[in-house]
Image (cartoon, rainbow, N blue to C red; front, side, top):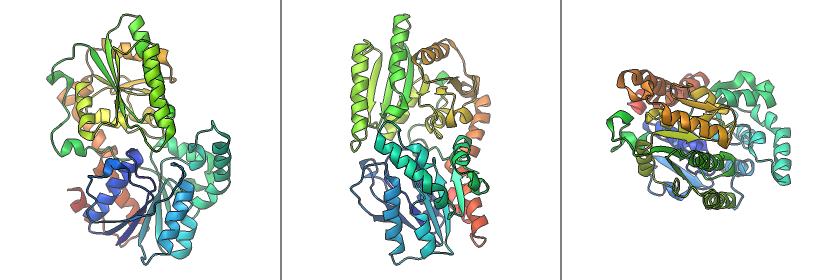
Length: 403
């Protein structure tokens, strides 16, 4: 079977790891795989994409302009010499009508991380205009898809809110947590009980340096803890995106906040850690922090679950579904420094998280992870959806892919 994947802008986020999981799965299942993209970040320069035909269509566009990029990628596909059996598209459905015109019998599976009309920040006039324009046509574009997979129940609710006519096409499939850094080697998840205790409680945030991620409330919470005389260490690790000025500006803003709030002795910024460094930080920490509100899914709470660490999240979006209150973490009502500080104190004072710290109870959480959030579970659900679209597709292939 010939599978085409259209994924613009291969950065190092959840959607990008989702793409890598799909690429690997289809290659290992013995299919021919062609990947159309507009750029591949330096993060992946040493990554092996063996078996994948990469067709790079470099465009000088503002990052995040997925509508235009997918039009260009779709045009490149329809003018090519290939005739795919299945096309997987994400980010924007802008290319789907022309694809269906050129390949009317080809099935199109759309993996949606969020309706694009709701994605773009509303702080600039051009963004608002762009989102409104997308909203006018997006419903029609999605009519051409055969199935729409969304990454959380929250995303499904937002999707049907703005495009209610497509409800019957939607399936919720949680994206996989990429645990290659663990399974490949060195760092297996360990309970906090079997590693040396930390002199001060360590909180770890793993997130892009980006305004919508609300890392600023972590710095505010650290200042509140310091005023109360509570000792803690806070590490903010994440990628600084060189192609996007807002990322660097936000990083510098956090540096300034740390100085102004006098928490340099508590808060450390760790820009662009490697995978190995990231999982080492997980093992060293006592709790994880994930502060963006209304996050579509949120991979960090799942990584924390896999790494056996409790997590503090905002009680909205995907994390509301994936975090179990006072079992695998704590939810705060709003992205507020005060509320976050309260939750951090709760974590410092809570001596035990049995479902994470103790091996026997953790088996139940591990089983939940394997079923809902692992690459194995993700690919099984992809196979099931494809088999419904293409009855000749043999899901038995997935045994070899997931072994």
